Image (cartoon, rainbow, N blue to C red; front, side, top):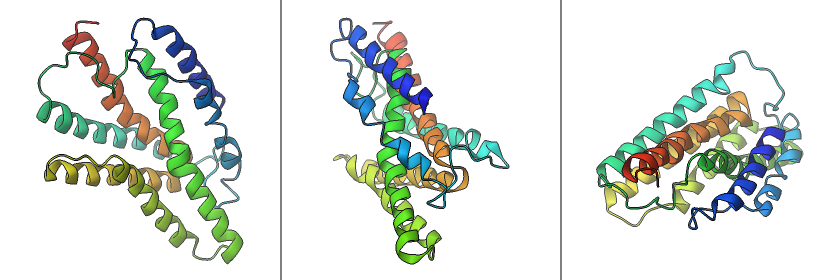
Length: 222
């Protein structure tokens, strides 16, 4: 958690510096750092909720980092193929809003991935599991988990549903739901860090590596 907060603080300071060179860059403010703090009590409640805690050891550590990161990387590659190479093969004239200057992008999207996962998964899943234990004395724990996993997996694809042709709407919804559901599954199997690792794998391709390509190849380092 301390590492994430440090990255978030660097993102805030970096954004204050970079704005003079990139006036349209996405800004991170100190309030964004404060929005990360609710993660602390919920991380401490993982074991009480029947979930794997952040300091719990697991037999196969690849389930916590390697496999989730690779899964996110694959979803990022799919988005890259569909959205960049098929839908927008022509070079960008400037960095689009979903890309940010490198290396600022590393800090922004690393902290951003953590912020998203707090409110998409950590808080709702932990709260639902705790409520289930309190009301049902631990019964139906897995049913509760999978129900909230499905509901939380629907949030992002619904919020970001495009208004373009039908095949792209279907792709966005299916791929968005699938990645979020994988995150919930990895969360169950290896803890919250696994869910973050999946999103970081996606962000690495879709936001960071693509941003480097656009900035230094298509825009010539501008």
